[in-house]
Image (tube, rainbow, N blue to C red; front, side, top):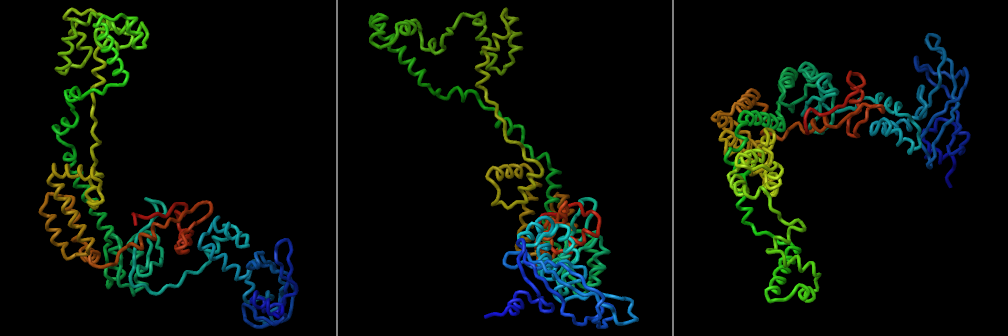
Amino acid sequence: MVRCDDLIAVLFPHFSAVLVERVFLECGTVRVSARTRGRSVPCPDCSVRSGRMHSTYGRRLVDTPVGGHPVLVELAVRRLYCENTACPRRTFVEQVEGLTVRYGRRTPASRRVQEAVAVALAGRAGSRLAVVLGSVVSRTTLLRLVMDLPDPHWPEPRVLGVDDFATRRGQHYGTVIIDCATGQPLDLLPGRDAKALANWLRKHPGVEVICRDRGGSYAYGARMGAPQAVQVADRFHLWQNLGTAVETSVRRHNTCLKPSTTELDSAANISTAGLASRPKVMSPIEARIRERHTIVHALLDQGHGIREIARELHMGANTVRRTARAETPEHLLTGRRQPRPSQLDPYKPHLDKRWSEGCTNAIRLHAELQELGYRGHYQTISDYLRPRRRQRIRVVGPALPGVRQITGWMMRHPDRLRDEDRQQLAGVLARCPELDAASRLVRTFAEILTNRSGQHLKDWITAVRAEDLPGLHTFATGLEKDWDAVIQGLTTHWNSGPVEGRVNLKVTWNLSGVIMSPRCNHGLGRWLERHDGADGEVAGAGPA
């Protein structure tokens, strides 16, 4: 059998320094009444032990839940006199190790749980989870717990990743420093200038490799703060800079994006002769009318009468009579409106001729017919030409690709292009030899970047110089200025991927406070608290 004292020692090890007088359940809350043991305790200022009591008072402490119920500790503590007359403190309150802290309303165990919730969720989300865990805490308290946490200890980094982030794009920027070997955030620096980075590197002299973007400020700061470190230009930024150079080249040859006039005319003009030669599909009603017209006229030729034909074909006499009066089936297909003589009839051959010649303007045709003696209305001519207008098909080709679309096709892997995109790109490259050369150079650089064969970069730059592509010339000049870092980026496996991933973990400051990812260092929230621009959103300077 387990004694009550042993059970309390197992479930509540932090109660070993106090005397538990009563444990009871009241209104769904486990209440623990306890008092200190009356031993002498040291003064917090002079460390002289004292047991002379001044007074007592009660403290209410929230502890971790037990059995699904919240726990409230009602602890009676003593206020003691300091026995050292030279100590400036006259009285002090005793503290129980593992159970109380100065001005604390929670036990250290409960505080550790809330700190874990605050680091993981913070704000309103953490407050909602704390209720499920049996603790009622506000969002501001959780944020305060995050701010009070000490910075985590990390070993001296060997491989650094440096990049900038924006708290308010275009106005407020900062610098994030990552340990690329572990992916752990190390520090946040205000601004993105070279001086701040150089000062940080001087304080951490063990850095051997620095992964950075193509910006000149970080390159200069790395040279000033850690001249012994090897700088690595990130491959993603190299590819991004190449895309900018290709877009400049495509924009310079914008006229090559449009197809020639002959190609447009051949795509837009469809011969009406081909439409006329197509066999007309006969509807079931038309087929029935033509068959009925043929049968009725065949019986009339044999000498049969209208009524006899109606009885034989089980048709109405008026239907047979109307069919017999129609000379051709077309007279029946027009419905009740039978063709009537019109004053336009003498001029229809002229209209047909002018239409075949390409004159389709009814106003002009009306003026020509008036010179020939036509006195009818313009609407009659328009009604006569309307069926022909409906037969005309206006072919609208696909929208011409723009500069950025062509650049995207050239920068994309050929196997990932759609068939229609590949055809349009082939047409553009066939019309422009310069862009065709740029496309080949992009493919070659992609192979160098993918295979990390930086030893072929010099040959690639020589090939760029041989072409009339000023945009790529500028890109090649930039590579030569940052040659060592570029070669390291194209030959080693180090890159700024972990930094970009951390930058793109969004940290939003809203009414709930800082909402951070569980993997994000709580120091970022504390940095935003100390600097301006904390009401914005931390977003990456570029895609990861």
